[in-house]
Image 1 (cartoon, rainbow, N blue to C red):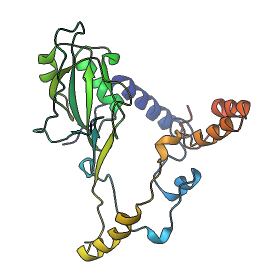
Image 2 (image 1 turned 180 degrees about the horizontal axis):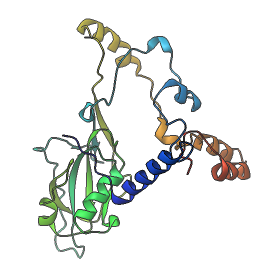
Image 3 (image 1 turned 30 degrees about the horizontal axis):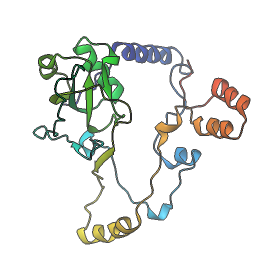
Image 4 (image 1 turned 60 degrees about the horizontal axis):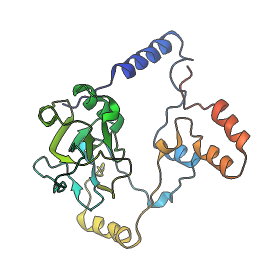
Length: 257
């Protein structure tokens, strides 16, 4: 069973929005919640030839979208619970106190929420648990995280819904943002009809030789779909206009509270 755990503050915010919307539909919820459809993609300049698009579903289930972090030396932080990474050799006789590092496998959590849950369970401040990059919330993901802590037994004993901490080992220093080579994606596309193997191989031919359409999606543009316009204003020297749009710009996609 998949459970999505929200922290207390987020649950309180959701409850307030639902209560406001129950009292008056004009408050609390967005007029037009963002959706991954051409109508909204077009607003941020993301377009693809319609004739090339087939019918399929991605991220229908969490394991349909797998993201595994690639370390700076090209190793895969795998979702496989039996697979471990080569542990770095620690210098002997140094003054630095080794920190701890582990692979975090999660689903139904964004990275921020997962880090908060781990830190809270270990009774550590959020800043004591660090990571290299953000991973999708609606996905099954794995990534390296580090702890400004030396309590390996507590980390190995940690049990949280939808979060598994594995392969705990020592390292010098904590992990920093950007300390990764990239991510490996395994994506299952679910179709409404069975796909002929030969037809699939033919369709994959141009993708293998020419690549495919790739773009930043809606989450990169804020819940008002304005950040690209603000960025353009900044780059063209329209700083006052950019600030005014940032502070006062409205959108049907944001909540009305």
